[in-house]
Every structure is written in structure tokens, then in C-alpha cells.
Image: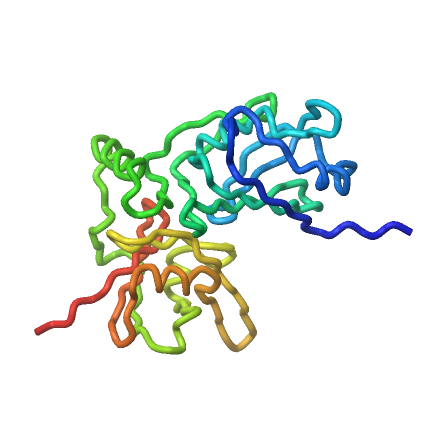
Length: 264
């Protein structure tokens, strides 16, 4: 009796030579799981959750490659020479989750400024949504240029506060290192109940998605900023003992986190 395949088999690839037009999957991975791989799959970034349709095609002998759709994926997420990509195949959904590690060895955030329109052939077209949050490493040239272009068309409310926006404050303490409890009034006003994740911004710092952990009961409301919060906190240097404002910006559908300056 053969072994049951793992629910999330994986492989990695280092981007060398010409990776812009196609990407070959490891032959050993194909030998093990080729029979269950679909002709058209999705590549979904692990940081943003966005997905691209990509064709899996047999080129020669046992060489299977991502072809049609791969060029667009590589361009949209900004794959660079020497980067390290890890692919996890979700058998139930016929989807590959992809994490990208830069030449620094650290996983990098993926741009989420593009929304794709699926055409009749099942592949994606691109349109730019200037109001969509961007998830990019601080200081990247693409981030700056796109923000500058967007400013020419719309006012940027990234650092503006509106007293009518849902908000709450916390004092950063030890028990909030890995998760933060979201007040019920804020969650309801921001429409977070039922959502799986939310996008957090820290003006001038790190931006990214954080997973929501919702565990309601008859007598208690429990919604936490969970996985991803600890990393967001560390990257932005949120300090213990300081007070922070969490404000939901409806137009951008993000939560901005800002330090509240102490009054002298």
C-alpha cells in the first residue's frame, strides 16, 4: 500500500539564470506528486493572500514548469535574482502558497497594490487601485514612486486622524507581546467580525497583515490581533509602557497604529 501524500508537500527554488519566462519544478517533487498536480494552479503569497493563475506545463522528459502566468506573478511580486522562494502545495485547493526570502535571508513583504481581473481564459489582467494598502519593505524605490504617483490623484490620509473613525487605545505591556484584544465596539464599527485578517499600518514604518482570532462565547466577546502582531510590534519598535492609538481608516480599510505622545 502506497503512502498517503502529505496535505502540504513543499519545495524551494533559488532564482538563478533566466527565471522571468518560466520556472522549473524539482523533478523529485514531480515524481512524487505529479499525478495530483492540476494543469492550471494558483500561486498565493503567504504574506498578502493574493493569488495568481499560473499554468503548469510539461516541457521535456520530466521537466515541468510554471509557464503562462508565471511572468506576471514574478513581475507583480518583484522576484529578483538570487532570491529564495518556498512553495507549499495545498492539495485540497490546488494552490501553492509562496514565501519569498530576499538576499538578506529574511522573508520580505509582498506588494499588494494591484488587484487582478480574471479574464475569460482564466488568467489575470491588472488594474491599479490607488486606495489599496501597500505592503512593502520600508524604503523600497517602488514603494516611494507609487506613493508619489498616487498622491497626484488623491489626498493621502495616512497620517490624518478623524474623530469619527473607530479607535481604541492600549498601553503596551508584557501580556500584549504576541496578541492584542480588540474591543467589541471597535470590531463592530470597523466590520472586523467574520474577517480572517486585517491590514495594519505604522506611519513611516512597517505595514502588514495580521490574522484575527475570533472566539466568541455566550457570555464573552473575544477577538484578538494574533499571528503577525508580534512581528509588527518588533519591526516598529513598539515600546513597553508607551500608549498607542489603533484607528480604523474606512477609505483604506486599514488600522493605523500610532504612538500617543505624552503631554508635558
